[in-house]
Image (spheres, helix red, strand yellow):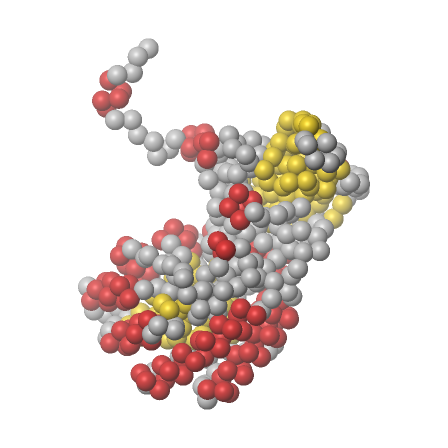
Amino acid sequence: MLLGTQRINSNGHLEIGGCDTVELAREFGTPLYVVDEEALRLACRTYRAAFEARYPRNQIHYAGKAFLCTAMARIVEGEGLGLDVASAGELYTALRAGFPPARINVHGNNKSVEELELATANHVGHITVDHLGEIGMLADVLRRHPRRRQDVLVRCAPGVDPETHKFIRTGQADTKFGLNISDGSALHAVAEVLRQPQLRFCGIHFHVGSQLTDADSHTGAIEAAAELMATISSELGASCEVLNIGGGLGVRYVEGGPVLSMGDFAETVVAALKACVARYGLSEPILAQEPGRSIIGEAGTTLYTIGAVKTVPIETSPGQRTYAAVDGGLSDNPRPQLYDARYEAICASRAAEPHDHCITIAGKHCETDVLIWDAKCAMLRTGDILAVQTTGAYNYAMASNYNRFTKPAVVLVGDGQADLIVRRETLRDVVRCDLIPERLSRTMKG
């Protein structure tokens, strides 16, 4: 499963963006996140083209939670996308990168006053309100700044339960996100926004879930949203300029895994929206979206160095299991432990050899830390470089310092050039926020 610009070069090594991954590991160390710039930019352009060809009133905001750093913000901006941020840290990163605030949408189910202050002070494009109390908080912030005005969307829970892992479902009625449509909470929130003189109601938002391999959940949610839009018009006299349908389109993690093309996804979504607009006699809204994984997921690869290799007896066939341990694991990719996520791997240093051995790829943390059970790979040896595919989304973004590991570096590759876009943490970074109270210093013994 070679993705993007990946190929096997004349040395038998895996190459990405014209860069030999074995050389990347030698220069930048491992674990190392590698971002394929060409694949990333192509995903941005393909997603845009798929929808703009079918529905010109379209806005795409890249979901920063999937992967964000200042260089990533620059790439997204250059490709003409907006940006969806969900915290003060993500917003600050975007602002430091010089991202145009008017193209930023601010999310979060429990925004703080400080986050609302930062967003309104920088005149972001939209704030998506998530609960009734937030409307009052936002109004209070704006009252302290009489000249500020803020465009808002209201996040709704459309009551759609998608076919995906239970931890990444967000559109059902029983969710922490948004305001329920069926019990009237969403309509009540819109009415509250309309009462606030410094808020401008622009439309509604929903997000049904992640790693979706069909558009069924989106079409069901669009139907629920359109009915709400019609009710907002008839009962409150307000129009929805924007319908934001979130993101959620899945990517290829394993060879042969189900995936929906961007073109087919766009065709289904646009057809459903146009049908609903016609049924309820609505004006066509701006169709806004927030793809993350489908933009960056397949453009990312993680490189590891193989350490310990051991074979142990097991009761089931074939009677033994071979473990190959990498120099990372749970701290740089928690998704296998959180979501039972599955990945494929390539022995980057011997990529041309048959990958016909069954090897379990383990991490080095003090946990049952397995990245891939029963991976098909070349027979791994200590010192080999291993490449794990499709790690662009929610890997660096969810990385931690568990066991006080340092977070890996991120390198951007393209046309044979490799540029560091996030430096590797040092051991000094790991303790940079630690403090020792004076009373503990006095009790130190030699």
